[in-house]
Amino acid sequence: MAVIHRTYVKPTKLELLTTWLPTRTWYHGPAEPELAKAGGFRLDDPEGEVGIEFMVVTDGSGAYLVPLTYRAAPLLGAEHALVGTMEHGVLGPRWAYDGCHDPVLTAGLTAFVEGRVAAQAQSVSHTLDREVARSWTGTAPVPALGAPTDTDEATEFAVPDGPTLRLHRVLTAGSTAPEDALGQVTGAWAQADGTRVRALFATLRPN
Image 1 (cartoon, rainbow, N blue to C red):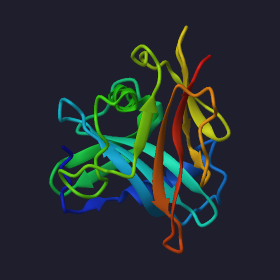
Image 2: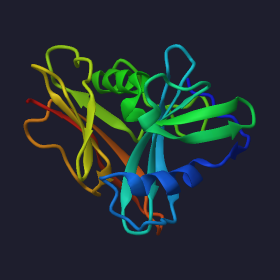
Image 3: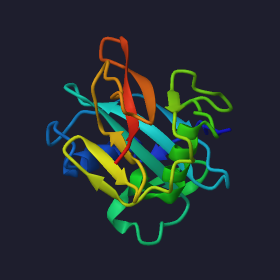
């Protein structure tokens, strides 16, 4: 299970995202946002090398899902997906990537949808996250995801002769999956007043 180190990270994740988020097509907030971490969860890398985090951030007007991976060395061919670099007090230099372009995260996400792995707490070591829910009604394993494409509100992965996975970047409290969904992931986050709300994080639908 995920191990959370109690140490410093410079710059912080929110500092990196403050610069990176406004460059995304699905981000509709201010050019210089004041971000807060509002929720999320982690998945384990079977090899124990890559940190995998699904972070929910808010900017005062909206909530966004940001999948991130943390690596000890650059990911070859993923320069376009680099969010930034950090210094971790225990692990040393870390390269943070938009996880939608990292095969370790996408493989972990499909394994989670199928129920082969469990969601881990975002900030507590060796602890499952019971607020994150998933379902899969398909009769076969989720195929390997294709290249991601950003839209105004999501990142989509089309699979030839398979379902389309839609990762909801813009979160809408209370949203539910369409009737034809083959699978889904839902999660929770805290609003500014402390109220916890739920929404769709991801859906799989037939092409």
